[in-house]
Length: 222
Image (cartoon, rainbow, N blue to C red; front, side, top):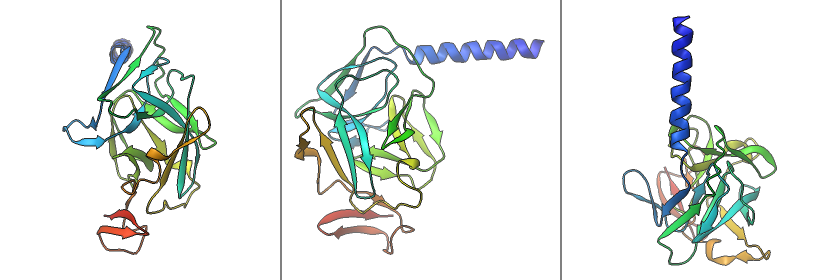
């Protein structure tokens, strides 16, 4: 009985800590985005997931609508939902992006969204945790892969589960990121960027470690 009581207390403490972590109704993402070590990890875009339906100031929210080895297409969202991961693209010249809430936070422990037609392929996290599976993530304004190696997730950010692409698919050396605005027009500013390259592993292509120019695009091989 004592053990059961202790487990119940631990569960309540965990739930309380979780609720406290999610009491964010005016979340700010400084631009450029930096990691815990103060290193710049993105100049104009990133991922976001919040426990309330956010009103955004200084950026546009997008959802992934299709993904292939060569191109990922995102579409602007006009009615964002709580506990749903999104990609955001900051407006020009913006130094911080604000995500306002209405005070009606409804937390979900495992926030997910459909991506490229696959249920739960875009996954958000409210906690710092180690991810030990194949994922793709936005960093340095491009799609990166962890090659299945453990990575640490950051609260209020999201990643793409490896299932967004068919099993065995290898990303190209430069994944094109296409963003479609509310009027259905493709935004050229954030697509086809020469620096928008994928971090490749030696297991994926037959090149020695280094930086290469492939078809005029930058490719980093580790």
